[in-house]
Image 1 (cartoon, one colour):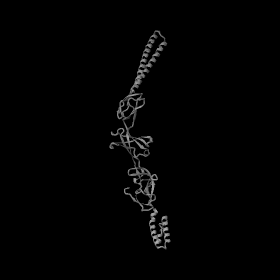
Image 2 (cartoon, helix red, strand yellow):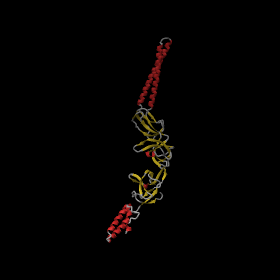
Image 3 (cartoon, one colour):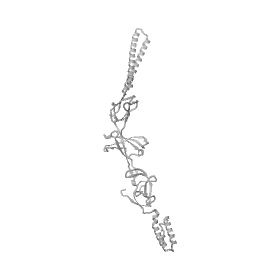
Image 4 (cartoon, one colour):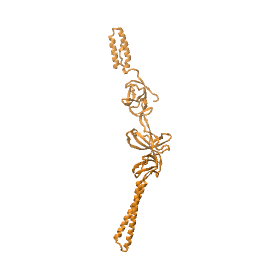
Length: 391
């Protein structure tokens, strides 16, 4: 009987077992005079001795979980983004004079040459200015002829002392003024002709029309953009990159560019420009990749996919099933090597794929991490571990 009530050296310190056995012992002592009660008490004591280990840790056998050993490796992450092809140089073409557009000769998608006329304004003001300049030139030329005749007459008269030297000097001065007036009027005519020529809007560059900002009949001011042209020449693949990726060093300066519609069409490029401005709405930064070669299929506006690898970093790669949320943060279950207890561990999630998670902090090499059977675990629970195959 004493053996049933003895806690034994391994259980004397457990408060649950000690209380259960002390209660049973007191009950048995008080019922020694009653055989029936004594029999019931002995059965109760045996039941308590069997259930006490279960009560000590919460009930049931140890949970069986699958684990892997955490090992930090050199992880080389890859980045794949979708963007489009743009010209490295884009020109906004505008009239140099104001006026009403009377003719538009190109549309979006048209390829143009430098001398090609894109649009015309009525040019009425410019024609009036040219007519005025021509009239001023004619008047100046008439005045010049008169001044020349007067000077020649005074020059002839001076030889016979029929006029004074002052009259000759005045005639010469008037001739010089008339000559200057003709020169100025001639310049005004040339300028008016040039202004009239600006009524025709010429491309000035070779390229493809990407935007048309005005319509026939619209009045435009000098300098107002009428047509946008993507110039022929080098092309960029343009991507909106999340700010977090900008700070990560690339593993190679080369970026692979693949046509989305036809992956067999591909080329390479290098980072040519990184915008200093962050898009507040999307949290992205505009990055331009200069294409080394432009395959025939990569025309303006086509969708492309950029593929690049980052520099290798020490990371823990685990199955995605290991991840869960603990106190609002990403975590994994670890198993202590000495007591086989499951404990939650907050981790820093670097990235994830369809099968794996990549952790940058929170684990140490050699720790056992639960990857199967962790759904119902609680902190401190005793578990039985099984090493997962192929992990």
